[in-house]
Length: 180
Image 1 (cartoon, rainbow, N blue to C red):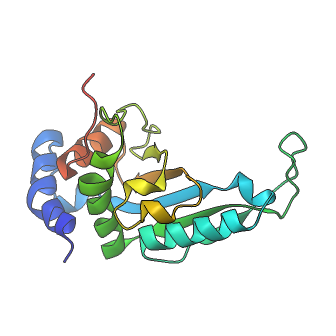
Image 2: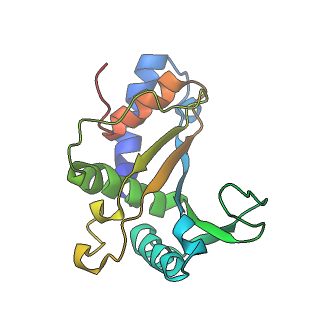
């Protein structure tokens, strides 16, 4: 079993039940899925950037990403409808907990000049989004083989109803938020 799933059962559920006065452990919010996405605008110029992004995201997440296409043409960005502009992966279950463990304990501490995650990046319904500037923060990626630095967005989709519930749950998992 994934280490963070054990922490969820032993530490997060009792902690949230105590703080928010849930009557049942089934009412306690949980992480439903994690969505990792990369916008690859450079792929419009050269397809090797898309291949590189797919390869890196496959290594980081453990599953093959979905290539996303532009839904409409935007002349200011020189994008046509149907062109490949990004990649994304949706993680659930054991892979989700393992990725979350690697993100919190390995990748985030390796980010240069890290001072904590913004506690304001919640969407109003308990979901949290964060961004990473480069994929080399993950230990699976060999920095000497990186052709171009690529940022990524990570979204934690939870069953929490409020931002406070979602923030407290992620704090109990070990997410390093800034103190206000």
